Length: 306
Image (cartoon, rainbow, N blue to C red; front, side, top):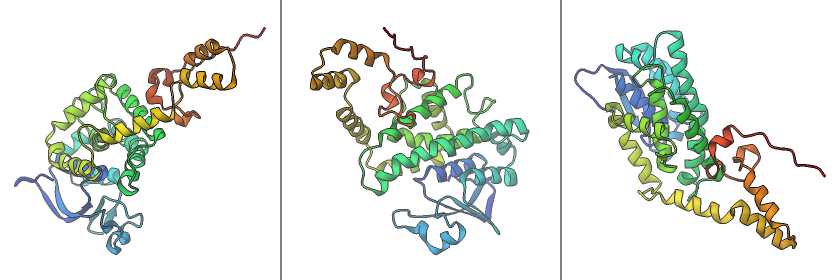
């Protein structure tokens, strides 16, 4: 994290972290935004240091980050960030985490969206690549990430930040750590998600993002061998297209195999249907369909009976 002579140093607080982890970087950004310094301990995940006796004693789940403040031990990024803001924060902390119940609830709502929706998809996409020598992202995960991008685009419809003010909140920081990492795996398309792309760019210009997020992002990208051409994404798309032909092509092939001559009716019917994301009992990825149609599907018309 960034430092400075005017920053309060809490020597009795220790943060165990790994820079490539979005959850750790979220806490680091929050502390930098609040101008708080703590003692830091880097944990090497590839060497299994997070499974050491010391870490396990503090957090049996063996996850990071972990914050120890004297006798208090916290092992959740949301809990750490809100605790530090409430316990040691000043005016800067109040900007990030409002003291009024309504403002705070709104910010915490976005923090929970990050931990319950975005972060599980980050783990689903990255863990097979990091630990199982996998070079593709599973299609259901690929689909869910784009659905999350779509939801965030709508959340930003009437506001520049993920709060009700004209400045970033704790919710923005937590979301930025995860979204910036997902952006490496599944790039955010500016034409499809202009507000989300603009928000992430504005976040990337903040000092706390530069000091506490950029290096960890670079470390993550290097660890999974991502380059500018995004080979994992490219390979994922190629494998999907090979395994899932376009609806009309698939239907034509099925009809040819069956010897059915009513190809035109089958093709027209397939064009009317909307591909459903994997979580909605379909095989197709919603990224290949119109997300607006998926979120607001038109009622299906009943087939006419003769």
